[in-house]
Structures are given as C-alpha cells and as structure tokens.
Length: 381
Image (cartoon, rainbow, N blue to C red; front, side):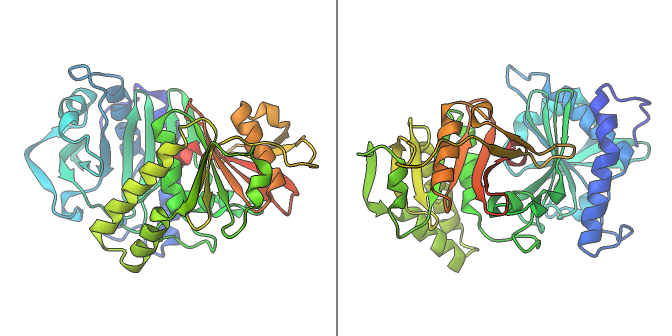
C-alpha cells in the first residue's frame, strides 16, 4: 500500500507472504469468507510496510526510552470505541517513536489503515476483531506478529522477528504425539483442536516466570501424592505445610465467574507471586490443581533410577526439525535436573526458564518413551 519500492528491513519482505497465508488459513478455519467486510485479511504490501516501520522504530530512542508499541491493521469503523486523531499521520519510524510514550501501556493498539497509496495511523483502540493483524514491538529489533483469540484479550503468536532471524510459528505442532496442553494452548488450540477460551494458568505462570529474567524451574506434580519427594533432596529448604491454596481457590472462583474483574485481578497477583518464587535457587513445586507445596527444592535422581541419556527436542516453528540429544546439550544444570525429574516422575511436568529468555517445557512422551522438551519462548513473547 505504501509507494516505497523496497523495505529497509529485508526480513519484512521475506515474512510478509507467509504471514498473509497464516491469516488466510485462520479465516478459513473460522468459516468466514475472505471477502467478508470484517475479514481484515492483510495484504502483503501492508504487512511489509508495518514490519519495516516498526523495526526501525524499535531501534530508536525517545528521551532515552525504548519504544514499546502495538500496531493493529484495521479501519476505525471496525474498532470498538476508538480514539480518533483529527489529523492521522503517515506510518513512519520517527512518528511511531514520538507517540510511543502515550501508547506503551498493555492492551493499547495504534490503528493503521490505508489512505490512498499510503498507510496512516488514525488513532488508538483497546478492542479489535479476532482476525486483526497485530504487530508488537517487544524490544529493540524484536517484533511479534499476532492476532487475538476469539476477539478477547489473549493473543496467539504468528511470527517472531529478531534482527535477521525470522521464526514462523508452526500451527501443526499441536499434532505432535503427546503434545502437552500448555503447548496446544499457546498455539491457540486446546487438546481437541478447538480454540480455547478457558483460563490457562500454566500459560500465565510461564509468561510471568520468563518475565522476571532470573531463570527458574516450576515442577507441576499430581495432587494427592508425595511421590515427587523421592526426586528432591530432603529436607526441602522451603517446604509449605499446609499446602498453600490461594491460587487454586482463585482459579475456581474465576471459572465460576469469568467476567469478574475482581477475581481476574486477584488471579494476576497470585500468578505473579508464585512465579516470583521460581527466582529462588531450586525448583518450585505446584500441584496440577495449582496448590503450592514447596520452593527452593533441589532436584536429585530418584534412588535406583538410571541417569537420563536421551531427550527429544522440538520447537513449534516452521523448518524446526526434531532432534534427540544428550541432556547436557539442552542447557545447564537447571535443564539437566528437570529432564531427570520428569524421567523419574513421569506423571509430572517441568517448566524451565533461562536467564537468556529461553523457555522449555519437559514432559514424558508415552508414545516415544522419552522425555520430550518443547522450546516455547517464541510463543510466550
């Protein structure tokens, strides 16, 4: 839509056709026609121009601050209660940097739409259709293409661009044997393949764990059993007795009254508190009902169990080949101990955040008879 012949950011041109193809598949999956007035199927030129402008904006500074903005491609009439500028301005890196301080709060999108041959920023909006193309500037040189799920506030990542590295999310990854529900939920589907509108606490915990930047391990174990203690050093540094059930109680309340702002705010606070415990050296232990059992636990090999020699690794991106490797190649001590824990406690999961932003979910795969590590940081941005 812009008159510029070539983008200054080469990855913009490379990714645009693939992103458009994803949105076309998304519309087809919802049973909507691409020609419907509310379909909002982005064209290649617009995707290219938005990615280009956002990338260069991400590398600039406004009074020393890194711009963090979200751009949504839609006309004003398809936004809900939009804030309209009297004079829309052309989509350009310099303009985006200047307005960034006003729209950096989470949930605010800058609305972008063509006016003749050029794209313009027409205003801001909070609520957008589920099919709407969104580009978020996360950090300098780090962009995420996404769309929201079912018109709500939860988003599904489509692609991640970091400098010259481009990752297209592979929607087919949820079809892997024994794919954990956490991964399918991050991909935008529940275990039955339908869009999930339920509260996924593990997703929120994973995002919060990654956000604190200190690295950490969260072990999710079956409720009603102490078998997990066979795989940790005793006594546990910070064992919790009785088990702390605030998060579990809030989750139940949210399910009973999902529209309650009070309970959702309480859920955010409880998730942040539990995720914060994972920053302590050792592992945090949570039941599958979200009851806190311990933190700072040191993982050890269960008595009589052999050391793990193999772990499967996958990342849900296009072109990402599955690999089987020795656990030492997966990461440091934190990753190695998590693999051993899941090998010995096969009805448990381990969520591991690295200080460099990597995030891996380890779960036992009965069909493959091996611990399977799912690299999911591209889904958590």
